Image (cartoon, rainbow, N blue to C red; front, side, top):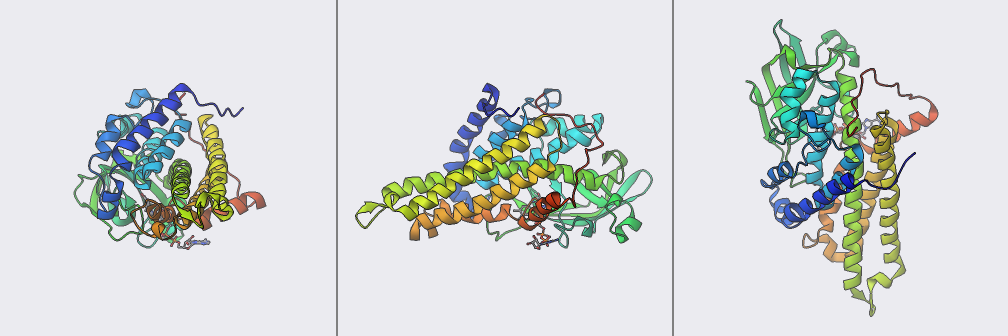
Length: 400
Ligand SMILES: Cc1cc2nc3c(=O)[nH]c(=O)nc-3n(C[C@H](O)[C@H](O)[C@H](O)COP(=O)(O)OP(=O)(O)OC[C@H]3O[C@@H](n4cnc5c(N)ncnc54)[C@H](O)[C@@H]3O)c2cc1C
């Protein structure tokens, strides 16, 4: 039975994230967003507050919290700024939870525990210059050389590329299958920044998420130890899809934080601004925009909570997570456009936060499955073209 009452622990995580957002994000975000820089104090503050591993089991250095807590923290972080939520999405959703699920014990000790404690940062490298949605179009290869794999390739649009210590990377280990575009030729590896041949760089001039680091990673003849293969050769595609199930969940919940930020900014402004002798909150068309934000916030929240509930039971939630992500991102885009509209010309200036919300909202309809990919997924589920199998791996359930 789905229960909408939050536990004390879930509320404690929410409040911790809310406080951190107020202190370390909202107060300074305008400056960092303008300068297109990550706040250097943010990751240490998140580590200090245990926000980098709170839903990883205690035995691996986390706090053992559940998926609903992850959703609530994502919402609070994105209420502050999208770039802050992206940290949770990549470090926990796309890196730590997949390592917890698919890696062996030795790998967890080495690559999960320091990440959960916030001593090391992890990220996810799937996208390449020539391949995003079309995963089997990627070109990176990891050729078995006996005692190591030789990794070559280029990853692009990688969040925290310049910041992370560990990269969960996807590359072809079967070159015949690469030619045949057969995803069972892909494998996943943990690559350390310190390995020779690894270089990274930041992308500038982004539309949004400007207070976050997004970049490229280049691998040139990188010797990846055999023991850094995650799970088995040929399972890279399944692992990547599992990663996206967790990352998309944080994007869905985070987008609710963005919708709420749009709503709150619009409510405040509509009480202050007067036209035609009244505060604009009294004009019905302004009310309509605010009502739409509220509706989008409420139903998007139910969608991510349903996905979180399934995840807490250890059940597959690819379909529900995709729906939650698609709808929450759509509503965030619509809410941000309306928030700018409610602010009139002032919404067009970075004196107010809503222009940042508008730019940030666009990204989430592109990363972690574009709007079109989620639309197709949902149609295919309904039409019976897509049926999820239970994953063969025993999924550890966080928070139990
Ligand atoms: C801020 C940001 C952070 C990111 N962080 C990461 C990260 O940490 N790690 C990572 O690996 N990647 C990351 N990405 C990359 C992101 O996941 C990709 O951009 C995304 O998967 C889309 O791929 P693409 O940009 O290559 O677009 P394409 O796949 O080239 O798509 C271009 C357009 O065609 C449409 N399209 C493509 N195929 C179809 C189809 N079959 N039917 C209908 N329409 C289609 C798309 O919806 C889109 O509108 C990030 C991107 C951004 C913007």
